[in-house]
Image (tube, rainbow, N blue to C red; front, top):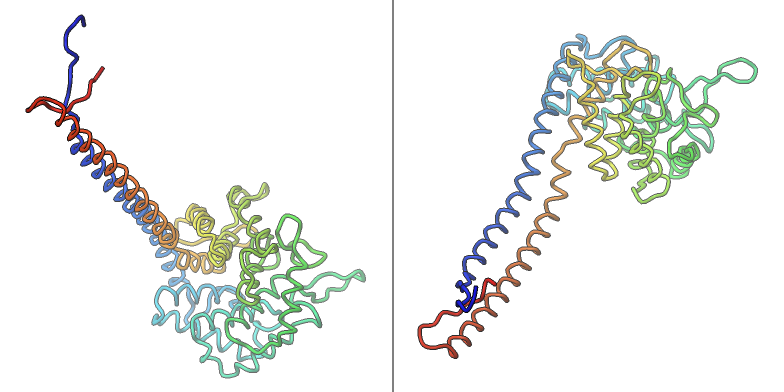
Length: 394
């Protein structure tokens, strides 16, 4: 440029600090608004799915409040789903009253295995309807009678070496019985509770899943636990609420990892390609129970892809066309596992980080501005009157 004087510009310090402040506000706003936006979108889809499923359940309820054949098996989930949607619903009331009548009747199909009355008692307890039972003490005693000495609860009929079928303790029967008794505060000694919990833990595999019995890995004929996904989730729920196990326990951590790995496979198997929607629903509830919200929502996301056009759900693991059992418990999961807790748990962290970053930026900007102001004052004292404090752009 020869001997020409270098171009000089005035540093707009105030303008830059204002822009920084604006960006801080924008970033903080996005950190709050964006998750809420996606949360609302997911919730809308989930709400629609739950509504369609509830409509299907409502249209298939019998006049006495029960559902389908062998009604003692599918009705507990359906009744709980209807009650969660509207605790004053006449339909929910009929189903809950029917469940109580079946438990009070010792000759009912409800009796014969521990898992069915356990599930029925659980539904009555969690819906605060234990009062519908006329014989609560007797019901509790009869469920307790299914426990083998120093072991779990029996129900499943397994073939013995001599060819006969005998009832044996299973993870499903034990988990269902413990959930029902724990939720209803049924009397069970600490020793028997410990025996049952220890039995469940003894069934865990190296990969974290749980077997049906000590000699049978799984059976599609077990309606409430047809494969290892649902058995593992049920066991986790029993350990959480009957045994007060935490996510940090090694047994629980391994089981949760097994279910997490199952999510990555979309709950499918090479054999059916349809997806274990019942197992996914129980997994969502188990994940939520142990604070694994991300995995719980991933399970729900899978569930939403499995809904039939009529609003129902069907898990092909049992090889059955009866939809109420799956639709009932899947709807319970859709109602109880919501997207809100995920972002509720994250937002405080986002806000805290945002505040820390904002404070840091303000401090830095303040220091820079103060430095520039002092520098400008010093320069003004040295330069002729009316000169502008500048920096070179070259």
